[in-house]
Image 1 (tube, rainbow, N blue to C red):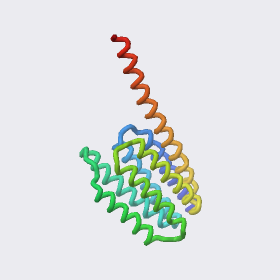
Image 2: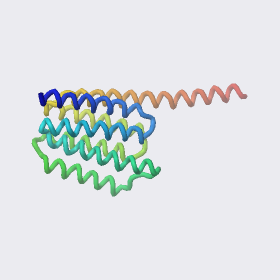
Image 3: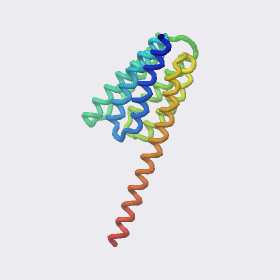
Image 4: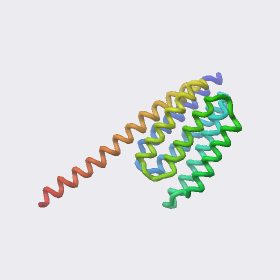
Length: 183
């Protein structure tokens, strides 16, 4: 029964995280990621994958902190980045299980850096790096819907990178066409 609860929580995490990278603004992306990370925390906790649980819980806190910074139209200071990096490292040390504990550590550091700065393309690229590492960890811990979720995060992030790159190019082309029509 626990196995199916774990997988069910992963499905909810998957839905919210997949939607996150289709959001145009960072605020909406962060809200979706926080909701996803709440489900992921519960999922890893029930699977007894404590490094994953602690790291996704830190992801919840990070998302909330970064959301309020963005809401005030401010950027988190480097000290915020350093504090979260230290918390991620300490969380890994306290929950160390095996060499596989390094995967969420590196994944969370990549995701932290991606969310710390404001470039949405970089945010999505670092999310891909993070998701690749979490995919391996989820497989190792038997959190199979978590693994599927991470694979879909990769796909969703890549689609977001392509989609918003394309829309920017389309806007440039439309502006050029409008300029030609007016001259």
